[in-house]
Amino acid sequence: MARKTPEGPEPQYLKVKNHLREGISAGRWVPGDLLPSEAELTQSFSVSRMTVNRALRELLQEGMIERVQGVGTFVAQLHKISSSLTVRDVHEEIVERGHAHEARVHLLEKTRATAEQAAEFGLKTGATLFHSLIVHLETGVAIQCEDRLVNPAVAPDYLGLDFAASTPTQHLLAVAPLSEARYTIEATLPSELEAKLLGISRRDPCLVVKRITYSRGIAVTSVRLTHPGTRYLLQGSFQA
Image (cartoon, rainbow, N blue to C red; front, top):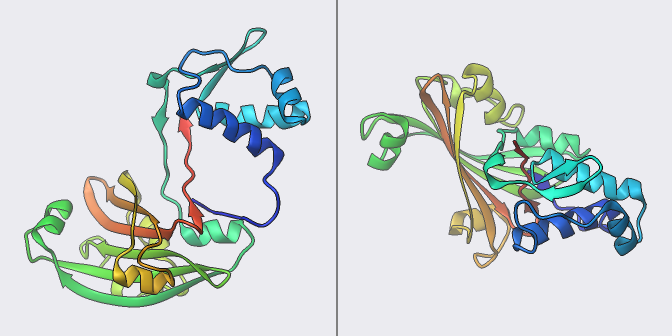
């Protein structure tokens, strides 16, 4: 995931990349179609061949296109595309952008698993789970509300940790190496509490990522990550 940076003009290569990506998504070009040549794109966008090449290189790395030397660039066949979203730590992402990360812990507690939560973790209804509610800020701006449940058998020290110094993701990946992650992603409105913690209106759309991770077949954590839509965008990669 990466924070939107509305300041300043959009890089030229992104204009080319987004034009092609949006055309593929809209069905203007379908799998197997020949895309405009580098020369055509260079002329259409009034940019250098190096700029066009960067846009095509990134789309190739994401698995959206195929390039055949001496022939051209084609939309990749759908059966060759698979999701490869990774679990990344928000602190590392923010630091990589050269910004300051701050975590505000609003809740650390023991809770009893509902029937739905128990099914997720493979536990009995009413079993103990650890619950944390943390807001992550980038240079003073709230960009993520992290509502997390943790399996105490995997991370027994969880409630005693200082999450202003180390994030839950960092700790959990250290004590329980990731072997599997399941995601759902949706655009929705925030809850009353999420809106309050993020400093937004209940009418402001958010990007919500729900994820449960496993280590050696054991459910480690289930988390709901809520991001204000105007402050965040989701980026992933695709590979053949």
